[in-house]
Image (cartoon, rainbow, N blue to C red):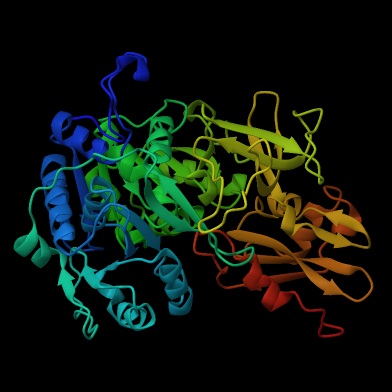
Length: 544
């Protein structure tokens, strides 16, 4: 069968090659045919049930779910909203939608109803799929979003919640929908450039903006992830996806695992240290992927219990900059190699990854794979003549980089296709990227700039410091002054100031050191500096 636009039969049109659209359903079809013993596993929390399905069964269920969705009136070009934690049921829905040309608009359950409703209305979503614990939110969203015609409650192990009451809008459970309406469906038959997904940015720098993902871009990202110097996944791996599927497509793991035939393990909404330890040990996880805060909880549990995780070989970190002390702690306590990475929703999300051979270095975020290009520019957007060993504003372009945000016609890139990431960065002689801060986080004090990232890197390496952030506090004389916010009680104020003394200019020294019991996190798992500014950014002398 020839997919995409009608083929004329002229082999010269394709350079003598077969027409083969790079659509995402092919990953699951490949896994079902060539890795039939590969599995998707979902944990139900500590002591809860563990559900598993081999790829052939998962492919069959997803395909029949496509038929069920079609019976509800969904068709190519429609969008569905998914408000759910990681699970087999969630992955089945993804592939059911992908196979029929329906786009999955992923939503973060940690957002408020008003923000979720605004995104759903913008996307014109036709169906709302939820985890069982999101019933109350679903009831509010249906009232606020008249375009939602159906509600689907996904399967999750051990989830015992009452179904939502959505009035005249029908509510289906995944199990009932498959039993009553599931039927085989012909996957594919459309262009690889069709939209496969929609993900909104976290909104930490303003209103969230939607990033549409095509089948083609996600397919190409997947091929990059499988490279040996990126994630290097193979069929012998068991991968714990602790990164949520609503964070830029779960960093591509629901595509990369079946593409390689690897076993994929979901922890659902149970990301506490005890649940993760039990799941890693019970399933023999070899690679674990997530933001640093997840692994902090796991380490604290292991240190309290003395447990070990002998199968685990690698941990891949993303999100905020990671102090070297935390990487050393993870590597020594878990006996693993830590790969650092950098990416964005706008990059689908792969930017750079530290190769396994260079793992354990917090100072770098790795190198870009083929298909991703980087450059450094000055504050006016002019390319720096020297690209190595200097700090500049980071720009990126490539096949999986955003061109226009959802619903906007004005490009998000310049005339050459470069996207301004908003990050400050350096690139070393070997091509390793290091994120040194966010341009928006720079603090202008007395007309001079202070880079919070440099202070954070020093303080984050002190013993007993879990998380650290530097923000600007309004100041009547100097406009802004730095304030240091810390989670962790290990280092005294005197020790912190001593560590900074001589390492940064004296006028960079924070005016205050604030301690919090728990650092506020944005929906991506990064430190929410907006929340910190609201709490600590007011001038104590003037209240402004």
